[in-house]
Amino acid sequence: MSDPIILIPARLKATRLPNKPLADIHGLPMIVHVWKRAMEAGIGPVVVAAAEPQIADAVTKAGGQAVLTDPDLPSGSDRVWAALNIVDPKGRHDVVVNLQGDLPAIDPQVIAAVLTPLNDPEVDIATLVAPIRSSEELENPNVVKAALAFAPQASVARALYFSRVPVPWGEGLHWHHIGIYAYRRQALTRFVDLPVGLLEAREKLEQLRALENGMRIDAARVDTVPDGVDTPADLERARALLAKS
Image (tube, rainbow, N blue to C red; front, top):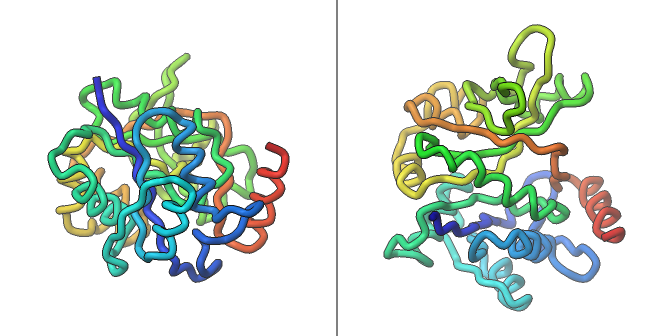
């Protein structure tokens, strides 16, 4: 039996939507909505890894748990690792879920689904994909594509590559990568100590560092891509979605 913990990295510096984690959605900061969705997933404790005190204060005011991390950490996975060592220095939690802090309307069942690939003991890192349903989505470089193939009736497949361009070539489904990860703790320990990979630097995709170093990533398929918030228009859409819930 695994003992997961969900960590949500969050920082105020964002080029397209400054102070994004504190953006108001129906009277609550966005980061609090994400924390609530993570709690509703029911898979383990939830901690926000905050780069700034304002984020931590917003979460604790709502009844959640947050820890402060170095604001200069280079990535979300580094922030998650730093927070893990603060809240769980003795290593009780053997699975670490890295949940983006800009998914206020995510279905809690989608969060829970990221654990499914870890049923295979050979898997180091688990993630999620959903079918790409339009040519615009397929050609958009901001939509990361996962190269994988699901066997008939399978809900989990091994990821062979990730790219900003359409892969693989030919007829068939393409898969939109959803940037939620579940790491075995030892895999996260190894990952954050690895140097930036050559393909990682080229594609600007952190998960390629794991693949370049022989780590195994499997993905569970879900039906839809959760709406992320990167722009003011995205924020208005999230407000509309949450107004209906």
